[in-house]
Amino acid sequence: MDRAQLADFLRTRREALQPEDVGLPRGSRRRTAGLRREEVAALCGMSPDYYSRIEQQRGPQPSEPMLAAIARGLHLSLDERDHLFRTAGHSTPTRSLRTDHVNPGIMRILDRLDDTPAQVVSLLGETLVQTRPAVALLGDETVFTGLDRCLAYRWFTDPRARRIHPEADHARHSRIITSELRAVYSRLGDDPRVNEVLDALLERSEEFAALWHAHEVSLRRPEEPKRIQHPELGVLELHCQVLFDHDQAQVLLVYTATPGTESHDKLRMLSVLGERSAQA
Image 1 (cartoon, rainbow, N blue to C red):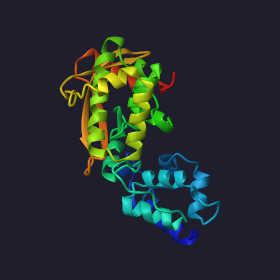
Image 2: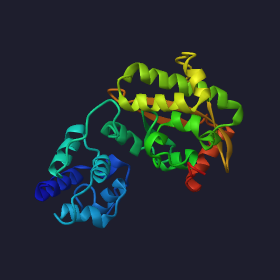
Image 3: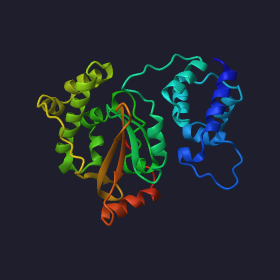
Image 4: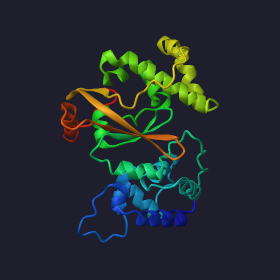
């Protein structure tokens, strides 16, 4: 671990970011070049003291999860992320289409959607980062670990995952989720993680196995609204806009409602509601 180089690298990357780059207000009394340390700490989900100690060449060696959080908070490119890991004394993460590192361009867009339900999801349905309205609408989907990180696995193995949609829509969602996993399998069939999820579902869910062997593909229709069942607001009919990153390894999902509808009014109320628990 090269403490001096690590501290200098973090400082330069922090000073290169402007508040507008990460969805923060500039304010009229800002004197700091770039972001403040406490702002970066908040973006990384860590205490200001912990982050400050790294920049001041103090404290313990950052763990790999901490470095991943810093790379995401500072909007580092993959090359910059690898440099961060090496400078901190760790091996660089394996690059693949299934990665937890969010594309900086996607992050810049997400930062400007702080009043909108939006989230970045991997091809395997693992939620990587969400806006606050998305957490209020869908629950915190970043808390899951292991196989539960995958939406398809939760949907077919945990009844709580289905509470987010009206019961009448469950069969349709089961078919769509299965068809989307098949599309991922056709693209990344040699990925161990994909095969791990698939094998577990075939073993543990008869419903999934039957749908999988039906070989249905491309069932989702972008123009069709999705019904979300919220515990306080009731059912919302929302459109899900999809934006792929440049290598189509991750997807930005943005939920909107038609202006003038009841769902549009309900969506605007999300900002005043507390975060919804994904495991409630």
